[in-house]
Image (cartoon, rainbow, N blue to C red; front, top):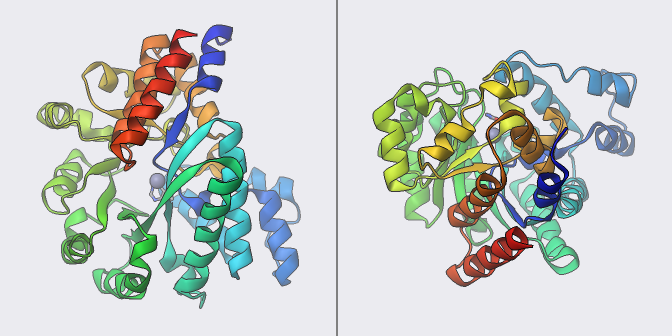
Length: 338
Ligand code: HPA
Ligand code: ZN
């Protein structure tokens, strides 16, 4: 049982979420709702049967189901409904700012236009800011199992909307798809003013983290937990304060770690690495932000000072303006002192 005072602190802390795939927030109930709206036949008889299929053995076993689920996203209202449902749920966890990923290739390959995808998500972002006070940024992710030419075409299709995008990322199956495969498209995205991030060191080796930093020039590493296989790399991340957007429940669900007790989050935090807690694909991995904070707190040597540090780290790692960061840091300190 979690100490009730820590539980309250977890609930009350203003949180910033930096690693969230919007398609990974599609709950089974909404999959069925959208399927009914569009007359799509699903290979599962019920919401419960679909949820029961979320029993993953590794990253690829998850990705297969995750991409299949996206098939119900057909029009702008679908993207709006999915994104708005995420913001409402995140707001309930006291998420005040989110920098969210989307995977356009999953949709454009099915004939859904880039404008439809971005339009629906951006409309929800505006509604969430107005109705809930939750601010956000949008990050376009390239699917690394596809070619760089495919990523180049995706960037071309997205550039007319670049004012609505804050950055580019790299996701999907990591093994055998090193960051260097996307050197040119990332260079072009950076030149267009988009901030680069990349998933690295989730299932892939520590060398992929070096490569993401040196070749793609990323400003944050998504996951990055396998950095601890290379002590010099951990030192580099700590000294340079390169943020890692860690996703604890995801890591256990996809068997990066057998148990939460084995997770290195607390050790990396103690080494001075700018680690943050995030939910990745919460509809699939059994929890949103509060659930992730609670899970690490229950399993690892993480108490009040570490929770407060994690909250500050996420503010530091965000792309918010300095004044807003100072405001959130002050709110965190006020909650910590209460
Ligand atoms: N890793 C790689 N690709 C992904 C993930 C992830 O955790 N979630 C959605 N796409
Ligand atoms: Zn991810």
